[in-house]
Image (cartoon, rainbow over all chains, first blue to last red; front, side, top):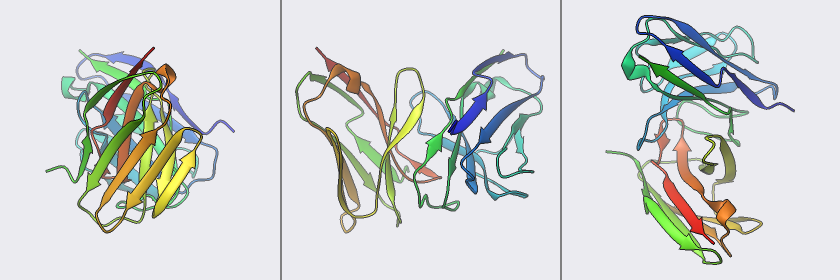
Length: 117
Length: 104
């Protein structure tokens, strides 16, 4: 099993550019999450999805968009990159859960290190 | 105010020492998760706990639901245990992590 696959691993963007961070899981998990991790801070939830066709905002959604057209894929879109979006981004999935709980083990991708200059 | 507090923030230990990392939370939970983040950045799940105690190799995790407290213990620590250990009680509630360095 590949688990959760994130691409790219690294990316440098100029201010105002756009990009999509890809996330795919092959475990048939319903619940998928996007996080950002900044130095000295805990993981912050950007968006989450409870199944194909259903997405919702997390704690820090501004500047981002997501879609969930299939169970496997949950891409994160940055439309107009800003320096404040410089961070490490993680995609995660779980079989059961909600926006408040994780009811089964979590699986994380390896992260995307994004720099906006 | 963060609803998940971990202590200590940083910890240095000598190889072979017994290590304890603590996690206190203030929200109701169905399960608590301990995660490990290695210097390379990847995050792996170590334990999911809803009661009692779990053991995996040299790692032991305990939880006291009434006191809203969990501990992660590492017995006979080894330099390869050097990592950041993160406590999570839900998608919105992560601790900031405990950075552990085990020296030979």
